[in-house]
Image (tube, rainbow, N blue to C red; front, top):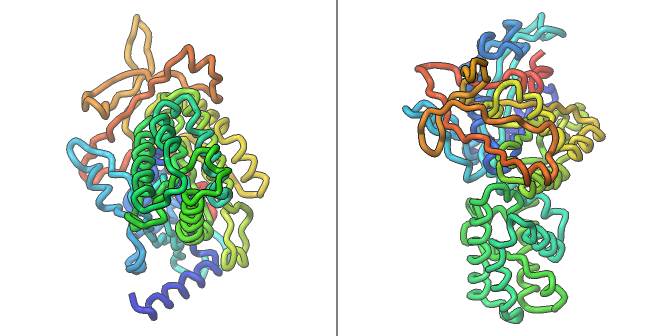
Length: 461
């Protein structure tokens, strides 16, 4: 893309924003929450699955005003493209597989055409067009946003408070011992690399352990284009080592500040400060499976992340110069992993986990909604007969064994359980593979039409 093409692209976007014909949607969620599946499904529903039977609660479709969506042909060549077609190919395999997780940031731009239902446009134009930009990025990078509020010493203290939790303490013991015997006056390249590799190994162990969400810095796990950069030589010293004015403390403080200033801040400015709408995906069921400490850490991680965004009502001036997120959809993902009558309890559990962030966004006048959904259904609900009575159940394919299973996954608590419940009851919600797809079939979903109506319905009037 030449500088002239880039200038024309930016000019068109500015014009669309001034006319309220451009929306930048951020899909937010921790690793494993289902961001890739959600974006793949969202794009499919808008470009291929736009029938009233498939999206009955998406107003513009139900009213027959939606003319279709297409992938924008003019996305800037310098912007990594979300691999929609590649992800779709995984779902169309036999047997189907989940698309691979995100390893870098990407974006996909869509042009949505519709007939306006009100105003001058409904009389003067044969169609209107909304430009939709969808932003994706690794969940690991999202966890770096809270670092903007902490200096290096505060981050060290926060990290070791976290590592003292029951589900982390044993894993952190070896790295603790290594730091305790480290010469603080040795800030050589070899020393930094040894400590970094040991800390990276610890973060990888945490990442592979269910229920450990706050793993910082995220770029040590998914470095992207920063692989090998000196600023990634970054570890949290023990709190007792912070009072010494040592060479190692000075070097790590410098690396931390560089990481925050040259990685986290630009990442936030480029991808998050311009958002208009936001989806926050939360995998509540995996947290319940992992236990009390994991559920508590999930709530803490979400609260810290949500503090990094700007929420409030939209206006023309704000859209042009200082955008704020005017609508936030909080979604409990994997609603297809529980039976339908449990969806209300799953939504209430999500609201319980997000009590503080929900207060924050409501206070700042952003419109919010919480719901349980499945971007890509992996099960079918039905009934089995047991002791002469009908019992609701799910049928799907177990992701570990590949075998077909029918089961009742259990009841979902309507609020975060206390420690006594976790001590006496083991949650065991299943992990399922996607449902097989017939040729040219719509992607099966739960409430994606509700999500689309909340996020885009007012822009497609």
